[in-house]
Length: 93
Figure 1 (cartoon, rainbow, N blue to C red):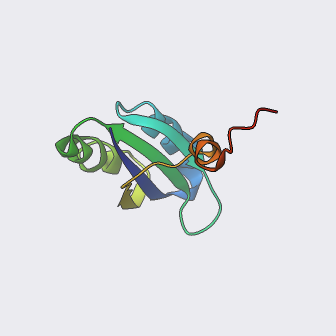
Figure 2: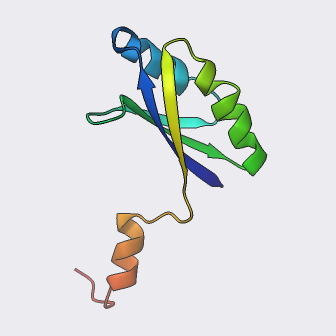
């Protein structure tokens, strides 16, 4: 699975509508409304690298109200579950 984190700037008046439309795109698993330089953060998960262009360039960027994107490709995924396993001493609670 290939994961991309897409930082999205959007027309301020359309942020909720843009977020909802992006959330409905195939390949988009989550959309967050955030504070900071970006208005929204979308998590895109696809099986093939080429599919990123389909989701991000061909569909997400064309949603009315999207004014810009900045895409980051994830190399590895870490979660609290993984970290608990890594640091576990084998002692049960």
